Length: 108
Image 1 (cartoon, rainbow, N blue to C red):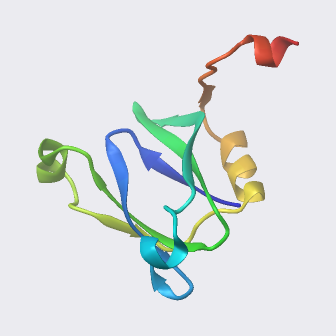
Image 2: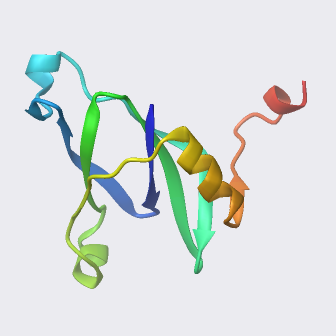
């Protein structure tokens, strides 16, 4: 698995694998990209952790709403996705917050 952090209010746009732009018809499925329930807080901005499958090399992200896009960059291409070790190191040096959907799954 690979990982990246994405600001609240941004979403994944296009995705690339080793053979180029992700083609749903060729792969017969969407790319496996999941937002995890862990985020960093940096300068009052939430950065959510996303997990992607190993086949993904590059992810393009963009603001969800046009208002955000007019105040920021229109899109960003993430070419260096993180390993699990890099994520743990980053979480260890930042103010982190875990959002739990089911507290019982943690305390049992």
